[in-house]
Image (cartoon, rainbow, N blue to C red):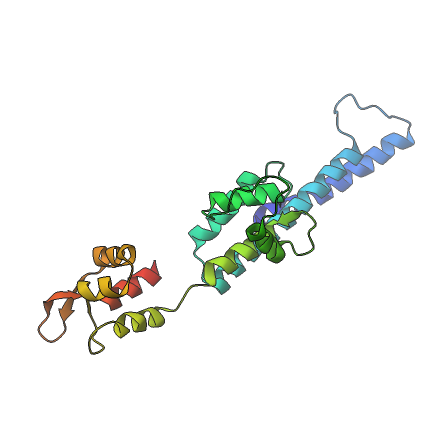
Length: 226
């Protein structure tokens, strides 16, 4: 994007040359040029629009990179957010109206209730309080990305906190957990997920697996790395 923006700006001298030639033609009252359908004014406007577009794209990319680095949200997640925004931005205006925004949230997995038009929608209104507090009826890409990143990170805990939570349900603060302990303390769905993905715990002294022991430390660190 930077390279293309620089390339556009480097052609400013060519545009200036065309404008000078156009001024000379006007001085000689030559108002029609049979060699082109473009006017100097039209070319100048198109160049300005292209230059502005390049700056906006560069600014948006820099914001997304900064958001990824600061928030810890994965690049894949940011790409999905951006892709969904563009999909529902039908008129390519760089903003979503409230209907488009709601459809976008549903596509991203938000379980918003179906409400008849004109009826109160407190759950969606609460989201708008955050993302569109002035109620101008639109959500910009920047507002949308900031909202999605905040929702993605607000419930994320550190790897150490998750390890401590697993350790708390073991007998005697062990470095491993059993299936029975998982099913006794977690929902069946959560326990099923853990059991299916946790590796057998290997005793560092004997270098042999302990029967029925699952390695929650390796599981947690792998989960956060991904």
